[in-house]
Image (cartoon, rainbow, N blue to C red; front, side, top):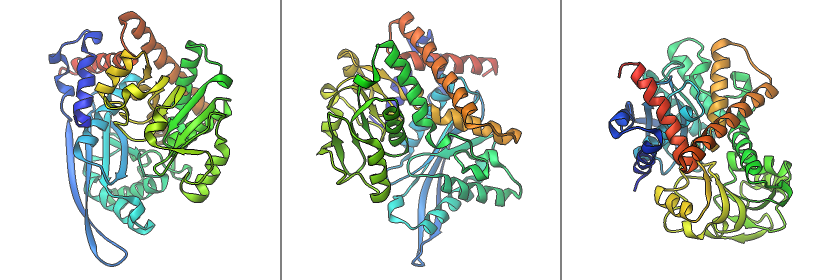
Length: 409
C-alpha cells in the first residue's frame, strides 16, 4: 500500500465518527492540482542534469495551500500526494485558515555542492512560479530543505514577479521576514501535546522514559526540549546509527557531537539497530524521521505505552490496527507535528501585515492552539470511543465538508 492509499484509508476510517458518508468526502479523494516538472540545472563540472519535481495543491476550501518542499532521493508523486492530503487534514485539525499542499524534488542533497543546490532551488521555482503565491499556494521547508534554500526560492520568485512577496514562502531566516521560533516549532508543538498526554496519564517527567527515532530538526529539538523538562531520553537515532542508554543520554553533548561530525556515529552510548530502537521498552516513543516505519511487520514489537507521531505518516493503517489492539495510545501526526505549520501560518500572517511578534507571543499562541486542539480531539475520543487518529480526522473532515457545502460545491 503506497502512502496515498494509506491516507485514503485513514479518511475512510473516520467517516462513522464524523457522521458522514463516502459521497460527502468525494472532493477529498483527489488533489485539486498536481504539477510534475522537469527542469535543467548546470552542475559545477559543466554538465547539465534534468531534475524531476512535484507540487501538489490538494485542497484550498479553507484557504491558500500550505505545505513544505522536500529534497530527497525517494520523492515520488504518491508520497507528495499523501503528504499534501495530510497537510489539508492537519490545517483543519488545528483550525487555521489554510488548505493543504506539498512539494518535492528527487535529489540527494548530500551529493551536491551548495552552489548546485542553489541552482536546483531556483530552477524548481522557475518551473512552478505560476502556481505559487501568497494567496495561492505557500511552500515551506521540509526534509533536507533549509532556511537558506527558502531564501533562494523567495529571491527567485521575487525576481520573476519584480516585487517583494515575503508571504510566498515560510521558514525563512528572520532577516527576510521569518518568524521567531519557526526553527523549532514542529518539536515545540509536539512537546506541548506530549505535556497534555503526560498530565492525562499522570506521568512524572523524571520517571518517564522517551525514545526518539530521528535526530534531524524535529527530533533533535524534541530531544532538547524534553531533556530540558527533565524527561529521560533513553534512545535516539539518525540515518547512520541508533543509540541506547537506560540511564539517559546527554542530549546537549549529542547535539554538539552531531554538529561537529554530521552524524551520531561514534558518539558513545550503546549502538543498536533501528528495529531494536523502535522496540525499546519506554513510556513514550517519538517517530521523527520518515513515513511508514511502523507497519504490520513490526507493530507487535513496539514496547512503548504512547506514541507521539512527530514525522509524517510513520505508522501504516495496518500497523495502527495492531497498536490499537495492543493498547498503545497513538497521538497522530496531523496533531502532534502541526506546530510547524501553525508557526508557518503565523509567519505568513506577519508577512502579510508587515508587523512582527516577539518569540514569547509566538510560543503562547502556539501553545494555545495545540492544547485546545488536543482537548477537542480528546473529547471526541471519549464521546465516540475511537482512537485519537480517527477523532482527529473526523474533526478535520467535518470542518472541511462544512466549508465545502457553504461554497456550494
